[in-house]
Length: 475
Image (tube, rainbow, N blue to C red; front, side):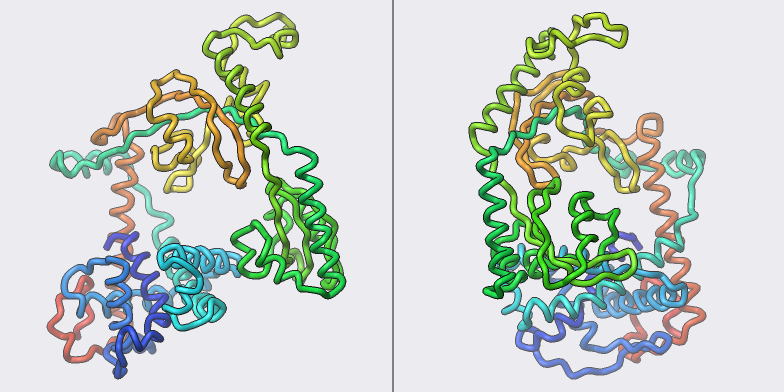
């Protein structure tokens, strides 16, 4: 079975408890034990709840849903039991981040927090609490699967043999990929705007200190960190290395949970922080983030500066602002001005500045690469690149950085590989991944079949005529 599909099935199964609670929408279910796997029972209500959730998610089952759904729940239990035996761990930080992301996705689909609570007939706190254990189990199952397949590898000869006689319409299609260089300028925030933000944060601190209101209330009302604002500014336990350095230095210096920190500036904006708890090298705090607003005048100034740089790159002539200092390592004047020179002299982007402005991507295998599918680029960059030719330098445009800040940028299209049917010579890594994924799926299938053989299984007679994906359930 496809591993991505199995992950989706695990996710659906993990929220069965939420769906089962909605008796008004799914009807009252009279429970009955229909399968037993090891010492775990599968109830009729589990199957019905997962069926309804699958319909809501648009999931199609292989074969008869009446047979496929309980089988997939049973498969999840096999992986989960082995994960417990092998002590597969999931950190609290991973759980919190995953649950919050899932809740945000549900809110975006349903429309609002209030509609989600009405739909689930529970408060957001109750939904979050119920999801934590389910999400932990989901991650443990995925961790177990990864452990089982982590040592698998395929040779070049295996890849060639796999695709040698494959019909042309079955060969994978490789989407268009590009390499992009970027120069960014972050518009300067006016001191008056910084003073305004700091004054607001001082006012929050004073109101908290006087007992007029709580830190949590103000965080929900004013914090511009969407992830923590809903939780009253509360963050999960974090190590110092996981935080912005300036933020971490202040947070880890706090000792009194009743006090509010001084104002601290990070790469995200300005914060005030309150200690909740410390556990060894980890700290739990709440914070309020405020982001200064960049003026239109500052944006125009940055755009004009980049326009000058872009023109200089196209003309190959150093702009007037750097001509006196534009020299090579031997101190000689350089006449040809390149995009790489523009990066060195003008770019504010620390992530790409030391790589001649080349943007970096993390692919599905977790590897760093300079190649992007168009869908993987920031939307503003993708829109700009889409109409450019290789070697072109764009006009300046405005975008929002990964840290939520307004930046201005110009880009150069370094390379473009048009979408095409994969070939061994040009796309070996992609084809290798296809074969490797097949090997992994086969390995997991084999593991499940062997685990069934050594596990106590009892199935209701109503399921004995099912055509299951895995052999061995019926004995």
